[in-house]
Length: 324
Ligand code: SF4
Image 1 (spheres, rainbow, N blue to C red):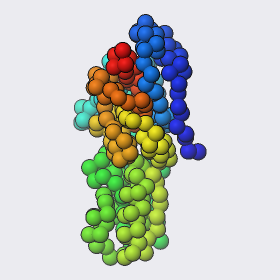
Image 2 (cartoon, rainbow, N blue to C red):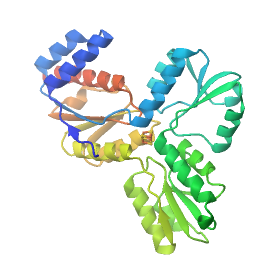
Image 3 (cartoon, protein in one colour):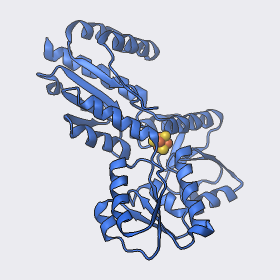
Image 4 (cartoon, protein in one colour):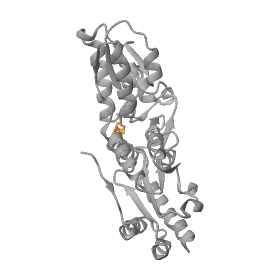
């Protein structure tokens, strides 16, 4: 199902914020004042923020941290520095080197980890391995694994459309028994030289445009079979963000600067309207709201609700100042 853009009125937003304030115990008075003074329309993409896979990973992490004290994640559990910091305060430590873990629980992140490392961790009986890899990422890994061992695909190269240095792609390639070649863009697809037929899969967060363009280039020269492993959550976010960007004077895209899917949302929006990609409320500037009537908000799949809410509140405060 394709999610739609939700146009939330100032009153609805205020009510939502009030609920949030009651929970957090902050900002109640300021919001009332803002509602009286600002006419800026804030439109929020319905699917802004956590996707299914990230929500699941955070739940698993919090559940584990509530039960025991030695909880580690191998690399940041999601690409959002503020959420990682919040989890650290609950005792979840981010590690680069799994050898440092002697006991406790280790949580594997949404993007997955290389196969050999997974095996090694599982063999260590002193550690509990909690796999928070997203089921859609696992589906892509299973596809690569199956293709690499399938007798019918024995002489075929597996093309992985994605970013070479991205952890998800590094993990995907590790399931391919040396048969994978990563192709990042059309230029690389044109340069590719192979000897047999191709199977093509994708990093889950690729844009369909990049994926399809690469497939088109390769199909001209090779017999190919295409496995579209792009995640719907990413597609839906991109479609809704684009639609929203077409209907507002300014877009604010919220999420980690290290988050691939947030960066792509910002790219899509900036092709349609003035766009800022920010991580926290501190980055919102009063001057952005001069002479505009509407602002759109969306957020990457790894952006928590509490950051989105905080930014929405800040926008209302600053917009009120501009219009007073
Ligand atoms: S964007 Fe898709 S693949 Fe990635 S974690 Fe979210 S649901 Fe999973």
